[in-house]
Image (cartoon, rainbow, N blue to C red; front, side, top):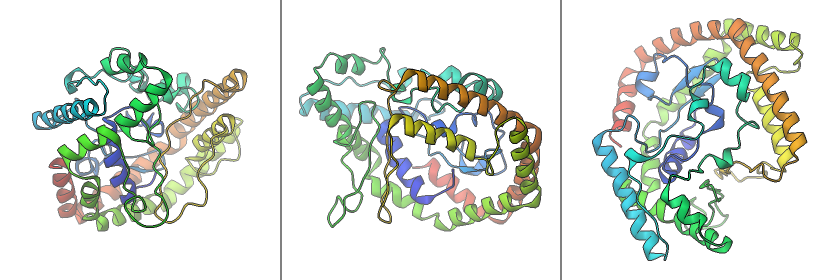
Length: 353
C-alpha cells in the first residue's frame, strides 16, 4: 500500500468516526515487523518492510498507549454520541475506552507471520471481516440486536450515517455537481458529529496533513528508490522464481499474490470495484459478508489462499526480506538525516492532534 496524503487525511477522519472498529486485512502479518529508522517519526502504524511498500496507518482512537488526555477525549465522544442518539430516539450506552474489548481476532493478529499464514493465509477469505465488530459484551450490540430489521437500519443510520453498513463501515462516494456533497463531506451520523465536536471538523483534520505535502512526496520518492535498488530488484526476481518452483507461477510484484486472492474473493462475493470514478472521488467499502457465499467454493478459495500465503511467506523469508531490509534501513537512515526537521515537525504535530 503506497503512502498517500489524501488517503492519510481520509483514514484519519474515518478512523476517528469509526472508533477503531475492525482492522485493515492488508495490515495482517505486518504486526511483527521491526521498527525502521523512520518509524520513530512516522508513528507505530508506519511499516516499510518485506511487503514491498510503505504504509502509514493513522491510529484510531483506542485505549492502548493512549494518554489520559486522549482517553478523556474519547469519553467525551461517547457522551456526545449518547446525547445525539437520544435526540434521534435511540438508546446508546457510553462505553469507556478502558473497557473496550480487544478485537475478536486479537489472538490471530499476534501470531508470528509464518503461523498466521498457516492458519489464515493473508486473512482475506479466511476471516469474515464483516463480523469483526460483533461483540456481545458491548451493551450497544445488545440494544441493536433487540430491534426489528427496519429499526436496525434506522439505528445504523442515526449512529453512523446513511452510507453506513451494519458493521459500521462507511461507503464514501461524493456526488457530482456542487455543494457540500460534491466537496466530499459525508454524513457520519451521531458518531461523526460527536467526533467533530471533540476533535474538530474532518476537513480541518484533513488540512493538517496538507502541511506535510512535501514530506509525503519525498517519502514516495524514497519508496521508489528502495524498490528500484538493484539488490531489491534481484531479490524480487528470486522471490518470484521461488514461488514458481513451489507451484505458484506468474507473480512479478510482491503484492500480486495477495491481490490475486482479493480478486477471486470479489468474484465469489459479486463485489465489483468502483469504475469510472471522477478525479478525487474515493469509495471506502465495507467488507462483504460470507453469509450468502457458496460454502464449497469459499472453502476451496481458503485452502488455495493458505497454500499461496505459506509459500509466499517462506519465499520472502529465504530470498527477499534480508535484502530489502538492508537497503531499506540504509536509505531510511540517510532520509532521516536529510529530513530530520520535517520529520520531527510531523511527529510532534501528530502527537498533538
